Length: 140
Image (cartoon, rainbow, N blue to C red):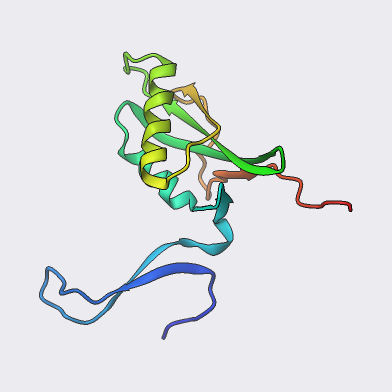
């Protein structure tokens, strides 16, 4: 049974599976309600997570902050640098920023680098990794 209108964004893959099966497979890419738009680009937190997890020298923990500047949506990413990483915080931030630009198409406004354990995202329950700081109520 497939539920429709769950808010999930996915695709159907009809290519032959490596195991030999030929039926379609559903791949879930993210949730529509998590998506935000920056400079006319749809940004999914799952894409940001994929970039963060691919990077060497960082723990993989992250936090995304969405905010408004000059009536435009912007986002910032906070990450943790491994304790044994010899690179400076600025070098790590520049590498992550460039990787995000290459994958998503829009650079973050800033990348904040914390020491290992500096982010409070580790918990026993589901972590809150996206913080929306926008004021979405406008008075005309």
